[in-house]
Structure formats: structure tokens, C-alpha cells
Image (cartoon, rainbow, N blue to C red; front, side, top):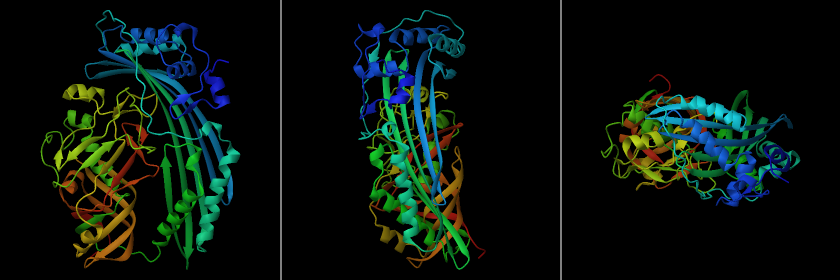
Length: 508
């Protein structure tokens, strides 16, 4: 039986650890040297190599410098529990192809939600209009790239029923209630995605990726003597059904309880400038938002980032190393190949305090004359790729958490953020801190909650005077928004000391 897009949905598709259940070969490509994996993707999207070449030729017909096709088939499921019962359940299937044409640094783009040759040629013709110098495009030989596999899985979500999933959200609910008698309400959510993408460009590159995603969220509301508080905890990885287990349920439930309990009796510090200790893990959101975006090459190419003239210059203490990676096994931000078909790499944005690299897509790497870094990412086939982060983290430093805290006479320790605002070019930020601790005379004292910290990302980076060896990745459900697109990311930090930030608290 031929595996079509429709039968794929019914039979559960095909990818485990980068391999797929193989349908019969397409008649039109039996004489081509293409792997069985690629043949499976071609069948999934109901296209042939000859169709790919015809669409690319149409995209290049007006004299474009380059063109590519990005196919995507994504299956998403969500289960929600509230008031003790699973009362939300929905699924979504997304399918289509985007056609991009580049002429210099200008982009022509169009997409279609079908993959018939007629519809693909139509959108290719639209994208081609970014250029206006018709020439002869010479087809090149198809060059298949077999990607690595940074997220091996044991059991595909496509083969898991709703009945298999329900017990885990129910266990989260029950365990949170068991852990603390103050709990009055629990909500739990389980989300899973299975995305298949295929990429082909005018240079003949043909590659693919299978991208699973698993996320579990727990939120609880607690009441104590009339005071009501709430907090939540999340975990998200590129894993299959093996993601769910008793250990995860316990970890998530206990963390949710702990985060809520700390809010009872919490206060606010005095407002003003003071030292701020950013805790390991969760504070990576500040590194990502207030600093990481300023390293993205499109902002630097356009002169909008404060780092646009800082390449090769010192921007932090010599023990500061900031990494942008997409290769960490099973991590939410990892990808096997970026959305422009480029190899995914680990790069040092900052090495020994010196700005070492920007975050590049194809356009910016051509502009700067450097190799792509594997950061060309898009939300879906409906969007163009732009430079985006994957997993951004600061490596361990030479100090200890205890030494860092003991160096603060009066300040705050924070590690649980909820949201914030950042001016990407300049790096000015305001972040809302859900919880933390007051630091007095070198010791953590009273819990604090609901405060803002305000500062400038590049300046805060320069003002990091100590960094501990306790680096960790925050494996939450982080989504990064930019240019109207959202993509999954991760981030991480060791405990660091920023010598001064503005803290919004009570009047002095």
C-alpha cells in the first residue's frame, strides 16, 4: 500500500529514531540514487524529484539568486485536566509547502496547503517575482543530505491513544493534591507534536527531519488563612511516549507545590538599584531575551543591535562563555537540520568574554562571508526562515553559589520569572519575577515575590562579576517570539552576580 498523506494520518506515520516505515518506491524515481528514507518523505508529501525540480525552475525563472522549498506535515494533540477531570482534548493536522526566492538580501515568498504540481508552480511563480531579470536556470544533480539524529525516541506519539495518555495527567492532579492540604485547584496539560519536514533548494540539496515534541504542565492554586497563591511547573523535550513516567509526575508535582508554598509570607524588597543574583537554570530567560536576541545577525547586519560593531571585542569578564547550540540530545531546542537545510552546530557567541560569533541564517552568513551556524528557523511552512536561537546558555564559571551570595550585603536572589519586555536592538528589559529571596549580609533571608527587575542586557552582561559552576538547562515549554513567529527554545545559566540592576519593590 502506498503511504499517502491521508493514510499516514490513519496509520500513525513512520518515523522512529530517524527511520521510516517504507512504502513501495515511486515509479518516477526508481532510477535515481535516493535513500529509502527520502523516498518515504517524497511519498508522504506526494511529490517526485522531477516535481521538485520543476517547482524550483519556476521559482528561479525571473532571475533569482537562490530558491528553496520547505515541506511540513505536523500532527499536534492536547489534553487538559481541570476540576479532577480531563475536559479538554483536541488535535490539529497542518500540511503544506513554502517557496522562497532570494535576490540579494530581498525575499520573495509564497505557500500552499496542497502539494499538487499545479499549486506549487503557482506559488513558485509568485515568489519568483522578487526578481525581474529572466535568465536560464540550469538544474543541478540532486544531492541528498542524511541528517544526524539528536532525538532518538522509543515510541511515536502517533501510535499512542488518548486512553494511554489520560492516566498521566490524572496522576499529576492526584499527586499535587496529595502533597499539600492547602491545594484547592489543579490544572494539568499534556501536549505532543510529531512534525515531518522536507527541504529542497536550487543547489540540489535534499534533506529532511522528524521533530517530535512532548510537554507536560502542572498548575496549582493553594489557600492559607484566606490568602490565595498559585504557581506552575513545566517540562518539555523532543521525546516520544517514553517522556511520561512516574518520576516525571513526582518531579513536576513537587516543584509546583514548592513554588506555590514559597509565596505565602513573601514580601517585597526596597525599590532601587542593587546587586541581583540570578539563579541557575530559570534565569536563562534573561540571557535569552535581553542578551541573546542582540546576537542575532539580522539585527547586527542592519545596525540595530548594540553589538553590531563589537565583533572580536571584549564585552564581558574573561570567565564568561555563552553558547548557542542545537545538538543537545532530546532537548526542546535541538534540531537535526535547520529550516534552510544547514548543519546544526554548537557555536560560541562569547568566548572568554569576547564577542566571537553572531547567530546566522543564509542571508546573514552570505553578508558576513561566514559559514551558516544552523540557526535559520521558521514557525512553519507559512513563514520565511530568520536567525533564531535554539539552546542558549552560559557555561559554568569559577565561583560557587555560596561565595556569590556571601558577597552581597543587600540585594535579591531570583530564579523564577514569568514574563517580560525587551527592546531587542538596545537590549533594555523589564522582567517580572514570580519569586525569589532577599539577600541580607551575605545570606538568603525572606522570600520575595511579584517584583520587576529593570536593566540593559549588554550592560548587565558586562556587569556580571561572578559566575558559579552550577550551570543547568531549564527544560520548560519556552517559545521564542520574533517577527510574528514562534519557535521552541531552551536556555540555561549558572548562578551569576550582576553588580547592579533596578529592582521594583516598596518605597524605601
